[in-house]
Image 1: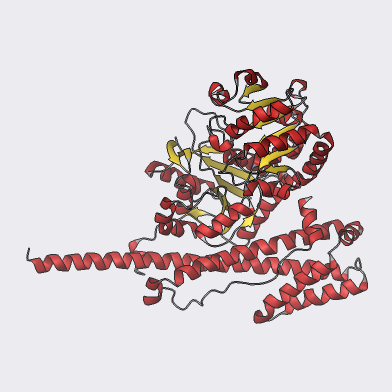
Image 2 (image 1 turned 45 degrees about the vertical axis):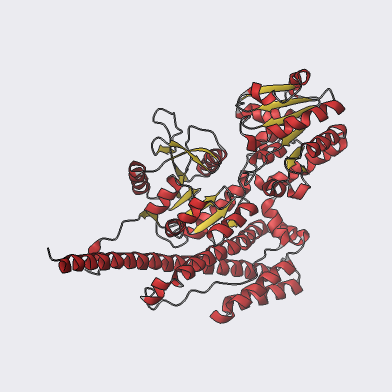
Amino acid sequence: MRIGIVCPYSWDVPGGVQFHIRDLAEHLIGLGHEVSVLAPADDETPLPPYVVSAGRAVPVPYNGSVARLNFGFLSAARVRRWLHDGTFDVIHIHEPASPSLGLLACWAAQGPIVATFHTSNPRSRAMVAAYSILQAALEKISARIAVSEYARRTLVEHLGGDAVVIPNGVDVDFFARAKPKPEWQGDTLGFIGRIDEPRKGLPVLMKALPKILAERPQTRLLVAGRGDEKEAVESLPAEMRSRVEFLGMVSDEDKARFLRSVDVYVAPNTGGESFGIILVEAMSAGAPVLASDLDAFAQVLDQGAAGELFANEDADALAAAAVRLLDDPARRAELRERGSSHVRRFDWSTVGADILSVYETVTDGAAAVAADERTGLRARFGLARD
Amino acid sequence: MPPVTATLIWIVVGLVAIGLYLSWTAGRLDRLHARIDAARAALDAQLLRRASVAQELATSGVLDPAASIVLYEAAHEARQAEEDQREVAESELSQALRAVFGEAQQVDAVREAPGGEEAAHELAQAVRRVPMARRFHNDAVRAARALRRHRKVRWFRLAGHAPFPMAFEMDDEPPAALAERQAA
């Protein structure tokens, strides 16, 4: 099958959607399909052979953080050329409602279109204003995928219609096979995420840390992710700062080893999450997970059966739960085991098969994707000859 | 230029703009109807596939005689049903599948039979795809109905003679044992 995938966010900047698209494309290529990904990227960035650049993305504040998006005349022309050259059987647009390549592609294409909705942002004023414009583009989508039951609910409330739920995929065995690193083991709490992004929840964890250290002074907190390290520990008493170790950005291999090593993985995110791929990765690596009780997290953790939940933004509850887990090796072993069997449903073998089922359902008997030629004036009045 | 001419020009410009807008809306509606047709064809294909696999399994001798009869009956009814009985017949096939493949042991028994691995895989795929195809179909129906209810479409009869689209309502809950197999 010839598959075109549209990535709305800049390929140069790492992010959940970009990783998802990369893994999906590689999984599909591995199965023998022809895949082309259209993504915003700087001209000098080295791109994998299956990625086509749609030009430089412009940083714009969107959905609570700064996103790098593509729009304008030039991008629209590139989208058309890509659609025309690709002769795809199906195109798969990610985030079709974000004002970027996804929406442009939706506008410019006709034929079998599959769309994945990743975010579950509350209804914004801009969305309401753009609703009628969006609707005309979005009603071309033949099949909608939501990454979680929560994302589906937002989609149904905001745009109407329905979607099938297919979670994001993870290469479970990659994490399960990683080797633990001895220096990251022994009474360690792990956190991965941008340090300076408050929605990732590091401030909540920092607030809880003195209470955890009071009970268990030997505990260490390992933080992987970019951001200002000094600022992050400012709220801590000086003598406790040495208990926090910053690892900076880590490679995929180190991330897997990190998750294999830590005693408890903590996800104190305060909002803005529609799925929580990091929890799936942690469970794949066999790390017991302690996460805030966001809707999306509760669903990934099987309502608390595959990992522990604490009340969102409640540092005391986080501290109590962390101490309880660190004190109880039997409970941690139980969570490891439950997590490992629970994550199989997020493995690419399952998720990829589901996504292919969607492709096959919409392409059954349909024509290939083509650029949506605007009907000429003559044709509109029934004067054109075929 | 006398003011009357200017007014006339503005009226003509306005009428042309309205005409273009209506024509664009008619194009949108046409595309939605085409999408419904494609989605309906896909749904029919999936339903038929499911009924065929069920019938194959029922006549294969892998299942016990009682289960075979129940499944055969339901699959046969689903395939033969008249258009207005279709939703009921397909729902009954879903119920029959749930009754027969409610337990993991039954699925395992099918897998162990010669050629059973393939049949079980086909059935698992079919019971997964029917709800997908139905959701995509009903989503298209919902979008078309929303547009057709609009004043401009009703007043100018932009939908022409196309029938008002109907959602396909049925019970498509897959058997637990087969759904789990997919997840495992």
